Image (cartoon, rainbow, N blue to C red; front, side, top):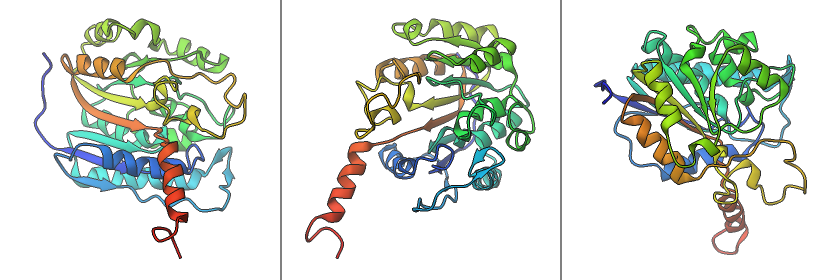
Length: 293
């Protein structure tokens, strides 16, 4: 059994949408927070402006660079205010886990293990992509864009990282994973067992674990509140982009099994896009009596 840490859990509500330049993440975060069980500790919400109609600027190769850095700093300020032992992060695009996981690695003296449950590795740089939500793990490892990587005082050790549910990767991502010798396991190998992840945790003698759960690790044919479930996307819009293949049952089983052998001190849930709820909200706003004037 794992060694447990007494202390408080901070819930950080982080409706960041600029990292993927996808305004529905803002509402997706609010709904995710509403759906979640009641918190057992303090709750803070990061200051994120509600999406408007204005276009976001590309600043030194990254969309909304200054806004994203400002929000990361605000997240860190809110975390430091409480100095929690554990963090739950409800987002928002994947970049919401940058400041929380950096804090946890400091809190546990550079010995934090990170399980990246995601169809994508999130290790790109501005040379390959302009949206920072695809760069967050690279930054946590001390790589990629310097301004974001420099917010991580103690980079996560590569040996302490494992991908779970990872799909096909680009040449750049494949080279990155190989160069740092990052462990990975695909959805097929986790379909009926958690053994590969449990073996890795025992191998590195992990004591404290942060889990990044990007909901797009799920199979969109079984759970549609994902980027790839956008109902008005043109045919072929997602061609060539890795899509998740796991089920909710498989993800829950994996994280339950993991929590039996290691102290889970961080959980970030990201990329919730509830298309049906968004459409219904819009419809209700236009109906007589219940809608606006």
